[in-house]
Image 1 (cartoon, rainbow, N blue to C red):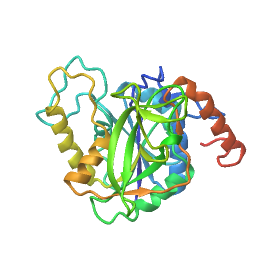
Image 2 (cartoon, rainbow, N blue to C red):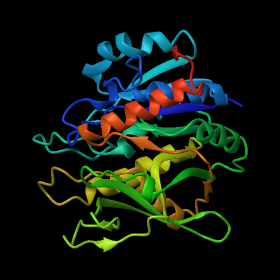
Image 3 (tube, rainbow, N blue to C red):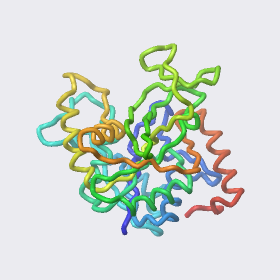
Image 4 (tube, rainbow, N blue to C red):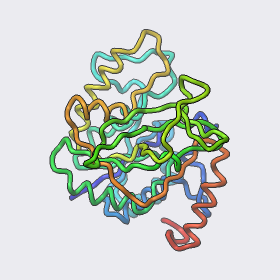
Length: 301
């Protein structure tokens, strides 16, 4: 069965202070998404689709895309601010992207097989891709979906707040709720709290699972995503310039509105990523360690 990896690489990286998607992290200046593609290929994925900004295409191809296209089928789609459902519009003065749901919708016309979604600026781990590839083969019907979950305590940054999809899982191992939670902060006493509405923070379970946007879907998701994206846009207050429609919100809605089952996949993989510039040295050290230990060859491509 054909399987596609969809890499969302059109974000702005405002907290990072630059375009972290193409900032070298590996010992030979590899960028993080190179590891995702390498691991996906090893797990049996046949195609990779990159969601990028249109004015980023030439640089992206030269730095990365042309290199890996010799190893795997590569396609590009563009996240365009004005790519919205019929009878919807975006304020002309808006500059902030509309979110990860719009990002995956950019690929709605070229993905016709089960696919996995990842962020470009996260490292997900070798075994996570193997687990995802195996489970995509087991999706029983068009609504059936899955998600790789990671422990919250392993996804925070000591350099500032992060956004995560905080998950609840039922006794059968399926997702029962997921909430995009902003301003999750690691406090000096080691506690992790949601500080979005209260500076003192609401305590979160450090051993609870969170989504890092590593989802597995069938193409069924595109029609429902477009419908819900339209409802989101039509419900925005006039003049709203920052609200985004994100994958965890869509998934939670479809679980409750469409009875979409979402299997939570267990993995021994360790996630890491870069939200802030200060996160970079740790990521670089971890990647070098894996190259030194033989998890990855000296050069990926």
